[in-house]
Every structure is written in C-alpha cells, then in structure tokens.
Length: 252
Image (cartoon, rainbow, N blue to C red; front, side, top):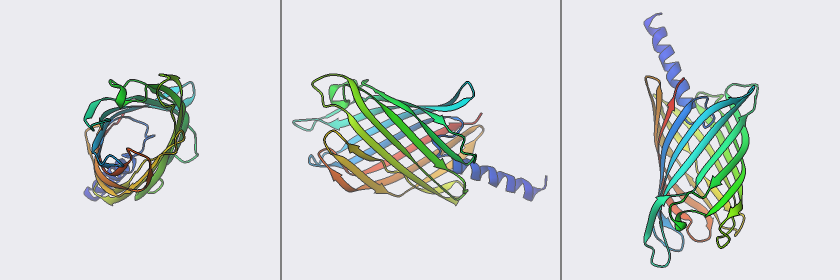
C-alpha cells in the first residue's frame, strides 16, 4: 500500500470512529462518565450537580440483536428547608432496546422496555418508587460529516413508598453532531423533560464541542456542552448547566 493510500485509509477509519463515537446503539461495549453542573435552579437559586455512570453492551437473543444500557446517577442536590446539599447515589435506570433491521447499516433504530429501581442512598436523592416504561432511540450516521438522532423515554411508577409523589414522566433527547475533521466535532444533545404528574417541564438548548481519538482498541470521546433553559416550569429546573462527558467505546 502506498503512503497516500495508507494515509487515506487511516483518515477514513478515524472518520468512521468519530461518526460512531456518539452512537448510543453502536455495536460495541461502552462506558461513559458524564456530568451536569447546574449553576442555577429555578425558585431556589441554588446550584446542584448530577454525575452519571453509564454502561452499554450489545447482546443477542436467538436471531435478534439488542443493546442493554444501565445508568446510575450520583446526585448532589439542595434540600428543604435550608438548602443544604445532600450527596449520594440516585435511582438506577436500565433499558434493553431491540435493534430493528433498517436496511441501512448506517441507520440504527431501537425500541424496548425500561425500568428504574429506587436505589438512592438518601430519600431526597431519589423517587423511592419502582417505575417501568419504554425507550426508543434512533441514530443516523449516513453522512460522515453530520450525524443525528434522538432518545425518547417514558416511565410510570408501579410500586414504592405511598407517601411519595407518583412518577409519570417523559424525556426527549434530540442530538446532532457535526464533524470538523481530525476527530473534533460540534454537538448539541439537550434533554427535554416533562413531568406528566404535575406539569413541570424543562427545555434546555446548547452547543458544545468534542474530541474523539482512538488508542489501540478503545475510542475515547471527550466533550463539553453549555446549555441554557429556553422554557421551564416548576421548582428545581435548571436555568443553566454545563454538560461534560468522557465516553469510551471498546472495539471487538
């Protein structure tokens, strides 16, 4: 292989890795460490922090392909009445999405059940409810330059402490990534939350930047994305926040 051909092949591999680095349905094991620093909460004007440990792994059942994802938050939230912060583990969320054959290997579409377990170490840091629902995710990497998709989830409580508010919530996360070359990309991946139980909602928007690089059989992805609320209602919604992440994909 000539020097130019080898360089082209390396660039193409780097481009493919960058395009797939943000794919939640990628056919590889992944571990992510992500964090939201919330600078200002509505009504209380207090700050907060929510870190996430996320693990994803594809698996097969008979002739069907699935992906499993588990997400565990570490919360640091102000509590009533004096605003002192409580810090600890929150509620564990898990979903398993069946991966449909879209006819296009660059387009991934998944749908399946999700469950949230009341694993919070302190009452103030979780719902004290068992909740179940569904998750739907799409990722389109047809273009090496621009990738997009969404994650849509809904869950409702079915068991737990009677004196706590029931859970009935939906979340929609649209995401878009524009590759600048060399593994650098622009990104937008806000999460829009709606509480169907009390009508509270949060709708942030933001634009961030990320960097993807590959070492041996691991793809690393670091990013930062400031987000600002464009619409919200109810107490405890983020007025602004900074979304940080360190994602790892382990190639087969």
